Image (cartoon, rainbow, N blue to C red; front, side):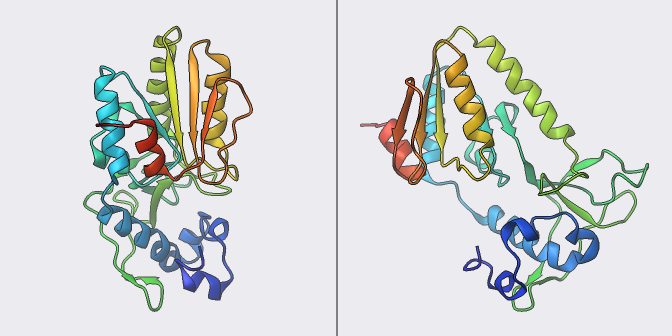
Length: 240
């Protein structure tokens, strides 16, 4: 993390330190330097070939799929997956909310698409040159991402996605389900827990865990593949 963000090393801030919503109120230039840089980076990033391989796979399965991701980068949408079949459990950097939503009645609960928002960052000083504002109350805005110790995160958008995911899961209760888990870590094991629970609970479910470090599976209907994401996907979905 410090190699990617040298200013954080100088300040002695880890990822969990900077990923704290307090900075949007205490030092918004610093908060938006970090999240503005990430937003700009994700907008420029092109999904790797693994996304296309997965998309081709679900097309062969009559589009009967659902994506659950802890990533906030919007790469599945950019790669062509159906917006209605994506559950972003930690929110999305491409949607904003007011940092003071719990205080203001006028903007409480509002989440907006950030496609028209821009954040310029001075990487030398590591400061945002402009601060996105709530369109309603004009206070500082923030990404609609679940951060550490985050009591102000608005979960409405994610809760709607979750409801669609649960409906899909219930509909496919008796079908054969294959879970392809890619790069899900153990530090924040949300994806591993949910995927593992489905694999152990649903009678016809199997889990394929792709991970270069933490690939172990401790139940019988799971497969471990000790590779990085794209290479692992290519291995699972071999094509002529």
